[in-house]
Length: 425
Ligand code: SF4
Figure 1 (cartoon, protein in one colour):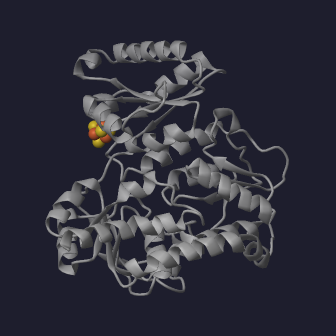
Figure 2 (cartoon, protein in one colour):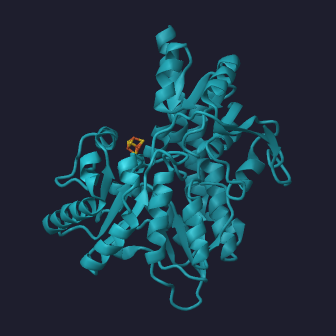
Figure 3 (cartoon, protein in one colour):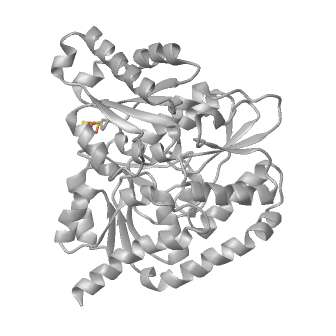
């Protein structure tokens, strides 16, 4: 089915979107724990799930480099649910034991999953009960990381949305800025430094690195999304009176500049001043991109829907590296949050939302792109058919935002092409 987007000017603002609702090939939201447990350093993620969930999280997180892990799975099976009251008691026992042993935990997330046994458990009731019992030392929250949701990045969205109701209220009417979305610490530091140099006052990040440093939110708060998959978090922030600053996402030199300029404009700071402050970093990013451009210019790329990063990535790869977009698929197209990205995409780009995996595979085979961005489940079969692939999940695990990472981001696409050339030689 083709439906038109709302009318706006430029790029793909009014381009038709192919909407598909069929079988999907994506990871579940538990995957978000892999980067979130590194980001919020005094949080613990207790997955309430099955053995499958335990295996997924253990293998996705790889080797634990911490002396004490900050995630675990409480395995629930049919027997535990012989009586639901017993399951709640068992959960209380597990949590009590964990918190007694780990005095460093300040926020405990109970993470729901999709096995039917777990869905029957009321985790929000458990979180409320446990929070009352362990406050003020520990706050217990819950969210779903279930694979029934649209895609794996929704795990971060659900986690951040669960934090919002407990954020402190802003004092007074002064305008403050909250950057929303988990970023690697090094990236966060770089962006915070640039924003301070630009003169944006009171910048904070959600999530913060520590539970007691989460930002205050209220009617004077402006928020700027750093990740494109945070629709529920955005809604929660707005229900607290915060206002979204519309901007493209900070991927690539151009995206980062426009993102910073949008933040500056909310504080009535002249864009020319942003250009001046960012000139050196922008120059480094452009130099790094020019080194990778010969490997990517003119190459045709196809995006399967996976992370919701697809549109900003496509914009970056086409505009800054000269790649040709054959199809840009996204699991969910949030028209409002994506308006600036759509306007920057080249006119005529084929856009798709949702998935019917067999039909999309047919389109991909027909196109024979030089590189395909897809989930792990599709990568091996496509490689076996002679196509070059890039795992979408790697783009979420790697630091890719901001000026200093622009070259590395481009490299992530150039490397598989180089590897294919070497294999063919
Ligand atoms: S939450 Fe669902 S999809 Fe994810 S690992 Fe557990 S059972 Fe599998």
